[in-house]
Length: 179
Length: 457
Image 1: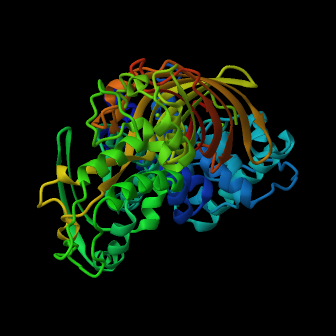
Image 2: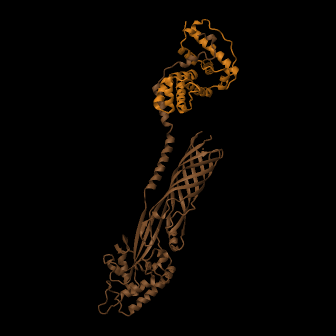
Image 3: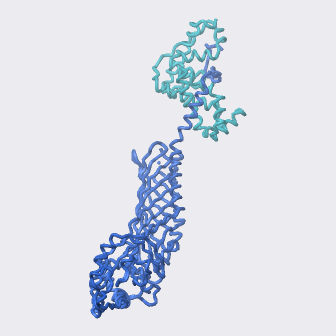
């Protein structure tokens, strides 16, 4: 379901009205920038990806059907696709073995973790790890879908995810920030 | 949040987080990118609008021109007078004359350098004819004392009487050159338009001169006096063409020599065109199309008028002073250059066969062209030698034309293509009215070039 405020924006953007496009940009650019940042790992590439994403959003806005999904999810998908274009061009995903999960000793640590700090930690992971972690834990894609997106095997997706989790945990423990 | 138990989508709330960045700068970049993108599209629209404006300009502005050139030729029929004229010729060649002549049936006013020579006058009158007239004149002269050749003013020698009946001489000359119908509207000082081509054909001129049956009435009432798999392709174009004109007489209403002269003296037959086309692909190999176009056909030809006037018919102010008191007659030749335009608005309907290679698209095309309107702008001479508006003599709608050609498309990118369209157009209908002097059909070889945009990928 669309938010009421989004309905007016959608109508305006479908008519290519600059004012409506500006409002859309102001409302969602922060969130979409975060999405791009989570995948590409640095602000410069995230800005490029976001800029290209908005160009595609404005260009194909007439094709957006509000009955099929929310405006936010549609735009997030465009940003993810744009980010994955850059990722696919940069890296091939090596075949890895899945690691067994090691629990963090102090579970209180995670409850004190701010979302923005977590975003920063995720962005510091190597490219394949943060990509799979974002797609699985944040966007909610299945390993099958991730494997199709990244052109890797399903088992490799699982292995990469387990290693990504281990790495995040290690970073949290090593930094001792949340004790 | 228990990181150990994280599962699919558990960190979904990270989607709602906002990180700060320079939004103003990014929005400015976005606006720049948006403005830059449609440049090529607007260039195409601008070019199309410019082509249409040019077409409309030519359609709505009449731009016809008549240029008149008058040359004055003097011919002296008697041996004696001709001798004396040799001295005058040199004098005349260096003068510029203002010639004003008032005729009963028309007024012409020009400023022209005088050209006089016996050799030139011989173009208009054959030697045989000349000898006949000379013999007639000589007979007259032999009965009277001759001029003193040393007298530059051509005055008679005071010691001898000089009585030459100049009227008789001139009349004799007039009769021997041409016979005119008494019922014709032409004065004896004028020669009908139908005789003009005969200026180049001495034999025929003599025949007519000797042909008692020749009658201006045979001319009759001569009143004379044109591309991924897209569904829709929008094109704008401009073009040039060359007319193949097919002129023919309409029975006995006009002398065929006039037609020959008209054909021989046509110098300009180019066409211009501009328009908009829309083509729709109906299957893999075929597309149909329509549009609207403006076409202008230009024509340029000259007609000569040959006029003979008795010297006495001129007033003193009209005749150059050195010609006063001379025997003989004055011949004036007028050349009128006609530059006319014929403008059409057409709607073509086309069928094309699509053939695509790696780099170009070829589309052999056949079209039926519906003419919405034809407007003619310019002047033409009628039988009486009067210059008149030519509009009533051309049809306002010429019906159907047929075109065959092949468009060649070269894609610039996924949306825009350049194209060239050579084609041959056949107009089977006579474009002139029944009251026109001659029938006119036209075939046109044309080349259109333009830009197309593909819509509906």
